[in-house]
Image (cartoon, rainbow, N blue to C red):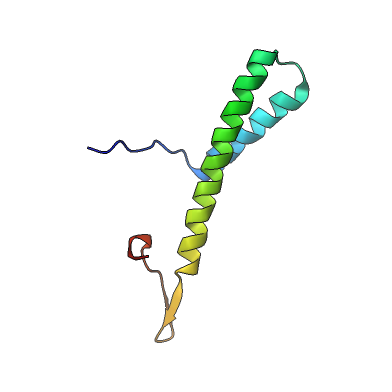
Amino acid sequence: MAEKKTEINFEKALKDLETVVEKLESGELSLEESLKSFEKGIKLTRQCQEQLSKAELQVKKLIEENGELKTVPLEDA
């Protein structure tokens, strides 16, 4: 069975990213802690970008049919 990625929701990922940025900007972290925080920030950034891209695709799939708006599942893309 394929392994499914565990994803946190966009809002949580963004909040976590903001926390990482605040820690890095404080200048109080050691070099090792800074690198770990930076790595975590990169992962969170990629996750947010991926979720935003998926949302953008879903919005683009919003079409008008017979005067009604309809969403088309991304699987049909």
